[in-house]
Length: 114
Length: 112
Image 1 (cartoon, each protein chain N blue to C red):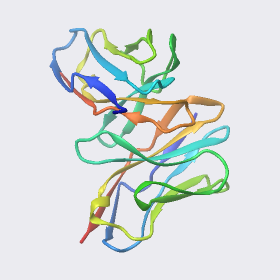
Image 2 (image 1 turned 90 degrees about the vertical axis):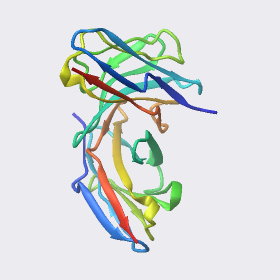
Image 3 (image 1 turned 30 degrees about the horizontal axis):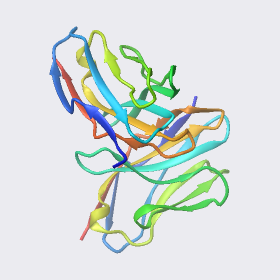
Image 4 (image 1 turned 30 degrees about the vertical axis):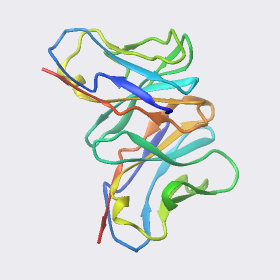
């Protein structure tokens, strides 16, 4: 069975500081990995994905993530946080061998303080 | 505008009264999926569809039915809703499983 862990329910950072939201995964085959963001009372919006190729992927709004196969991690990062980045962030995984099934983490609430 | 639409957005119903939540996408996407979101549990996949007439169970399919008779529509059916199905439901679609999913605005369902 596949799974995703987001070990931190809440991450707090000051505006202008770098931020990291952690994600680890478990699949039996190779992973497709995604990050989504949810603003209050809204649906989820896609940020970035790793399918294959370069381990460092860049996405929307200045976010990036690094795929680390040995540590089975896909942490989300941003060099300089904005107050407007405050939201709920979800990591998701699909297994290449059963790509229809999509598993999300429990989510991490990011709060960026001025 | 490319979008996924869901109706209704809000629904309060009683135990046992059959209901359908509609989902439609205008992007010609092959893949569609339903999720429920509960506090502290993230999103859990209910059912997904790889194409017309092809559906499969996600992690929490009990108490739900789906159908995919047309590419654009993927309704979620609760034939006998129970209070533990009170939740926020999202429909999503993508071109294929390797592409990102586009999410609808959500349907907040309360079963009393």
